[in-house]
Structure formats: C-alpha cells, structure tokens
Image (tube, rainbow, N blue to C red; front, side, top):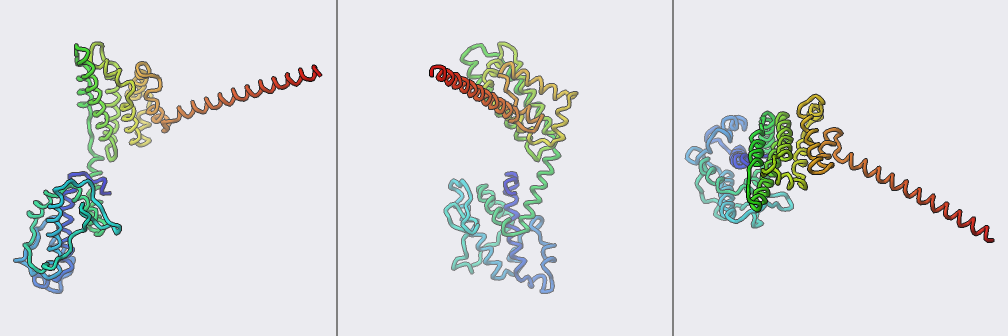
Amino acid sequence: TLQNLPGFLVPFCAERTILLLLFIDLRKTSLNHTYGADHTRGDFLARWTPSCIDLPSRDTYELNAGFLKFTTQLHLFLVAAIMDGRRSVKRVRADSAGNFLFPNGNGPPTNSSNSSSQLPSVDIATLHALLDKLPASWKHGALLQAAFDHPDVLQTVIKGVETVHERRSKRIIDFDHHYKSVWDRLQARVHLKTAVLRAASDARNSIDETIEIIAEQCRRPSSRETRRNGFEALVKIGKAILTSERNTLGTEVRRLFGDDDTLEDGILGILKQMDPSEKADLRRPAGDLWRRFVRLRSYTARYWGGDTLNRAFNYLETGNEEEEEEEEEEEEEEGEEEEDEEEEDEEDEEDEEDEGEEEEEE
C-alpha cells in the first residue's frame, strides 16, 4: 500500500504519524489536571486531533512520567535521524522482528539514564523543521513502521491512497502537446551529414522518452479517457515518424526506429491497462482510431518489416500478443513432422528394394 503513495504525501504522512504517536501516548496518560478522571478517551480525542491542533505545552498541562519518557525518546530519535541522515541513505532496513532500523544498524534510541531531565516540548513548527531535514527514506520507514504498529495510521494511509486513486481516475490528460513536439522535431532540416546523424540520435532518444512518459501516465489508476488519448497519441507519433518528408530529420529517425521496440511496447502497455469494453470500442470497424491503427501497421510493414506491431495488433484483437507466433511455430513443427514421415517412408522403400535385390541375387 505504501508503494502506491505519491512522494509528496510521504512527508505529510510522516509528520501526522509523529503527531498521532504523541496523542496516542497522551491518551494513555493521566489528564486529571485539566479534564478530571471522569472524561473518556473519546472526549479527549474529539477535541485534540493531529490534523487541527498544536501540541500541548508543558505550561498548560502537567506532564507525567510516561509522557515525558515518550517525548524524550522522540526527541532523541529525531536528532539521531538528522545527524545520521546527512550520510547517503540507500534504503531503510529492519531487523528480524520487523522493527525500523537506522542506516548504522541501530534501532530507535531508548531512554537514557538522564531521561528524567526535562526537555523542551516539541511544537508543530519544530516538527515541521525537523521533518524537512529528514531524507525521504527515513520518513517512508517511519511511516511504514507506524502503519504496521498502529491501525489508526494504517487507516489514514489507506484512505490517502484511495483519495489519490480517485483523483487520478477522474483526471483526463491530453497528450497532443507531446505529439506536436515530436512532429516539429521531425520536420527540422539539417544539412551537414555528421550533424544529421547526431541530431537524429538525439531526436530518437527524446521520442523514446516521450513514448515512455505517455505510457506511464496511462497506467492505472488513470481514467478511461486518458488511456484512449494516450493510445491515439502514440498512433499519431508512429505515423509522424513513418511518413516524414524527404530531406528532413524524420527520414533518418525513421531508419533508426527500425530496430526499436519502444513504440510497440508503449502501445501494448496502454492496451494492457484497458478494460475489455475499452478494447472492444477501439476495434469497431467504423471507428476512426481503429482505421488509423490499421494504417499505421501497414506503414510499419512497408518501412520496418512485416512483423512490426504484430504483438500489439494481436493483443487488441485476441488478448494474446503471442498467438500468431505460436501458430507459426505449430505450423513449422507440423511441417517438420511431415518431412520426417516422408523421409522414413523413403528409407523404408529403399530397404525393401535392397531386400528384393538380395533375394534376386540369391
């Protein structure tokens, strides 16, 4: 679930996680000084929630030993993380019990002998400053451990992922600007041959990146319209490459794309994200997009060979990108079997002739 969380949400969730841990500890402590013994946990949490209130200060509430111990550990945890986080952190590790570990192999610091010494309370502004200094891997690790240990945090993460998915599923992306950028680049005219080769190679790499970006943005949870727009954009980009005019950069790019599978991989990747109804809508004979795709396949067969786009075409028609290749292999195997049978028959005839000759000689 955490892998689906966008990067910009990780710092926010990590901050809320630390705040929530503080309030969970507060919930377990005695708050008789302010609320009295007859107030329940629900009354407390209804008023004090991580998303809308600053942390209580020591001037307002009487902190008991449990809360002071927790804030001390939290303070040491953040300080150690900031000091250790200055070094390169490649990944967050855990021990055999699943506890979060620092890159140096140590777990969260425990309460030291001088833990009874009072430390300044941590307000929300300080937490913001501390979290800004932590690497993303630390925040991800802290959030992972907190979500594993506390159902409230896990529910917050799941709800955040669902919100992001819902937002992306309603967003419609238009890729026409990518197609226009590719088309303009292909129409460039370069006179020096050495410059043409270098410019064509750069253009090919740029187009490959554009195709990969479009395919990536069409991955779920993208909207139905976004996937259709992405498929249409790749068909148009393919046609622009194949129908480039002479004496333009596009003619050299077309030659370079002859052994490049990026276009077909991109189209196939988008098709695999589509529902059966979406693919059926693309296959409508009267549909303009289907005619353009069939025309693109004929262009690729002319310039790049007959098997180009076969995988994407087969997948759109049958749902199996390897069907045609399997049929060809079966036909080849059947042909080989027939040839073997004919050779065996010929050998049997030769043996019979040899036996007849031996009988005549006898």
